[in-house]
Length: 592
Image 1: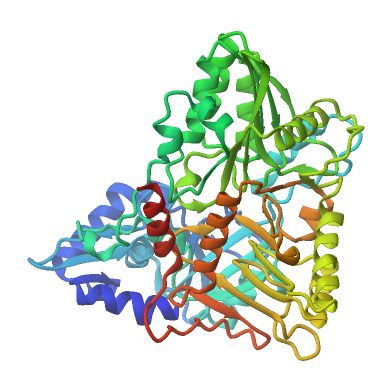
Image 2: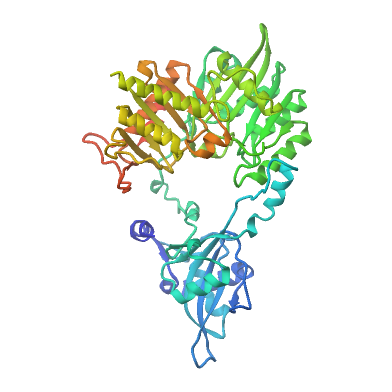
């Protein structure tokens, strides 16, 4: 709220953009607001007078409401009454443009149109004040037993209950009086652990749809995805991959080469098999359409669909049923674990026999999130990799544990946790032997206590450890006697930092891995994840260069330290380094 009121609103005013409240409106604007309410909002606001022990209204999950304190005009005692009104932001834009004087742009938030109209909805009452609220319901799919019965049917049944689940978080305006707060707690069956105080407005996600009035100069400068020429301009995509490995880095690179990987495979008469894992997929997906086209062309297609992908369960079920109707062989979730690995495999008949081509990624096969999630994706025909990818797909298809161990891939449920611990331990041994020892990790989150303790042990042995952790970081860097050799930062910018990168110095023979796995208990113990080695030295250098750019960010990087202040890293003496912008131009230079 402080950022909104003290930074965003004043900056908007500098550019003649004004967010008005109801008391700021002139007569023309009042008439507009009243007309807008009756013409657009009235069917959705659902005013309800709350009567203690007699009416228990149901609040829709994650929807905005206005709680109202009011008094009956005929009640001589002046006792407070309470009501709620829905703010219909699920039907209408949150920001409404008002009639404005020349040279300025006036707006009003939908919440304040509701505030302006409250007295019309409750004509027999005097309105004392209004306070916005939002209730989020528990979205967990509580499945009593994943190991017996029909798991998919259980998930479908649980999905129907998601939006009527118990309250898990109640967000309210900090100005709300305690009497109203206690009344709402009782009315909605809340306890103190459900409550979260915020400001006057909630659902700040709606700012993504703030009108721009054509002021493009106030937006982030455009960074259009760069064509990955070595694949997108290639006459034969598979020839280019067979010749050498290729690494794309969306959204800096276009996602077109990934889409073409599947579309070309669907049309290529020499391709016989296509296999892919699906965790989150765009609702309109050229990749999924290519799989259906491949079936029509007589190819064998296998898709493993993880139905337990949180909040994408219903979409994944829909895609699975759609693919099955086309003839795709689909397998759904395993009980007890999630399949979170992001990989694909194509088998192609060539002059010297069949060749396997693989795509391994840190991110999902999702054309939309590829525009805003920063990920790495590796195309390879290296037999050391593709053979193990085929082995993992065989496990997903048959649930038969592979007889051969994974030597190059690190796979959750098989060797991922153990190998990572071994790699850290090797750095510890190198440090104790007086050799250079270093670990660089880029993660979304780190929470697993076993891994954290091992990193503490490494720090105490003299291993230099640098972390880039965007989200949850349960490891505490820079603690005396514990983690002096661990430095950590978090980068939050226009793109979501989503790739996981593990770099181990290994006495000069560096090991570089890209992965789908964060260092959390759920990822390392209850998911099938992959970490895949980067075997091409040129690609490994490119990854390390990008990581070094991020480690030197002095614009968007925040320091993670024991005091939990999350202070921005201060700028250097010579130049400001905003890593996402620097990465874009670094890759652009590589493409030229």
